[in-house]
Structures are given as structure tokens and as C-alpha cells.
Image (cartoon, protein in one colour):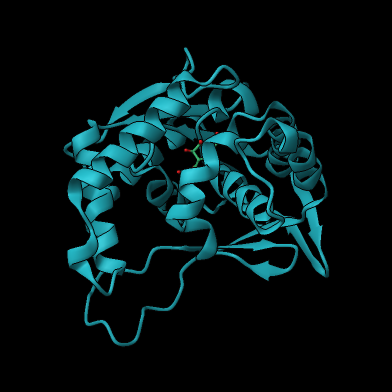
Length: 259
Ligand code: C5P
């Protein structure tokens, strides 16, 4: 079965993953968060006391990437959260398992984000993960106990978001989008997200959020292997004045033009 492949790349907090999940839900596509895979390997390395920045540990970490089971599962149309009165529909939720363990929350910690660039610039880790990502885009990619990462029979396509999906992972994707917005705007979005999910809002410092974001962008744009880059044939989507719903609408329109 030939699946429509939609590749969405862009810098941190550009709105890729929310947009990708909403578009996937509406188009009946499968969603794969390639960043979650780099996050899961980072977590696996830290749990084994391996240092992502140490050259001595690089080959152990790539072995770890090859032997780890990463299972990603998106729940489309989740029931609304009971205690909120918001009329906003809930976003699809992506659950991530590492060797059977639910690591959905653990992979989003600041500790992981801080250490991820060492993992993302490890060429052997990238080779292993790109292979898994391509297999997923074609149907199946990993077993986890009785669970199998696979696309639903009803899926018409896949959406994958990341940094190198259009350039490296799926160079023949049917549609490539490169999402951008100025760093300040992206930092405001991330800041609001952090405030919403935090119990102690006063601990979150906007300037620190902006600084961390710019540092991660710089690492992603400047690394030698598979840097963050717009593919020549990708459509540039500047989201500075767009809501997530507007971004999803735009992307769906572009898919339907090609499907
Ligand atoms: O998308 P997310 O922000 O969760 O990605 C976390 C990190 O994983 C990125 O900053 C980048 O270093 C790395 N990554 C990557 N290639 C991808 C996806 C993510 O190098 N395709």
C-alpha cells in the first residue's frame, strides 16, 4: 500500500508537533515524532550513566540505540479532560515507550533537552534511528512485547516531524513543509506551555527559555551531520501570525492539492 508521506521540519517550538498531530487526525494519517526517538535514546543513555558528550561512550550509545525498543503510539480523538471547562478539543496525545516503560513525560525533562545534542550529533545513532523512521513510514518498524509499531489499516499516509525528515529521512516525501517563526515568538509559545504545566510558575524565567531555545537551534543548524535545513523542494511556512489550527488547515489544504 502506498502511503502519502508528509515531512514537517523546523526549529524547536515552531508548532510542528501540534500541527502535525492535528493534521494527522483530520487526514487519517499516522503520526511519528522523530524527536521523541532522539529523546528516548538520550534517556536510555542517561539511565545507563553514559555521557552523550563523551567520545568514549559514543559507540556504547549507538549500540544502545540499536537494541532499544522505542514504541510510539498516538491516541487520536482523546476524550476531553473532565475537570476543564474549556471547549477546546483535546489534542491527539502521543505516548512514547522505551523497552516497555512509559517515558512520555520523562523524555520532556530539561535534563534530556540539555543532553540531546550529543545524541543527535552521533552519526551511528542517527543511522539506527533513520532506519527505524523509514521503516515506520513504510508500515512497520519495531516490536515492543506484544505491541507493534505499525500504521493503522485505515491510515492513508504518515506525517513525520523533526529536523532532517525532508532532507534525509524521506527525501522523496510527497509534501515537505519547513515551519519557522522568529526565536522570540517561539520562546513565548514555549514559555506559555511551561507555565501551564508548572505548579510553580514564578520559577520559569522567560530569558532562560529564550536562551535555551537559541542554543538548541544553533546546535541543530550547525551540526555537521544532518543539520536542520529546509529541503530545496520544501514549502516554507512562517507561523508567526498563525494559530495551530490555522497551520493545520494550511497543511491539510496543501496535502489535498497533491493527494
Ligand atoms: O522535536 P524535538 O524538539 O523533540 O527534538 C529534540 C531534539 O532532537 C532536537 O533539538 C534535535 O537535536 C534532535 N532531532 C534531530 N533530528 C530529528 C528530530 C530531532 O536531530 N529528526
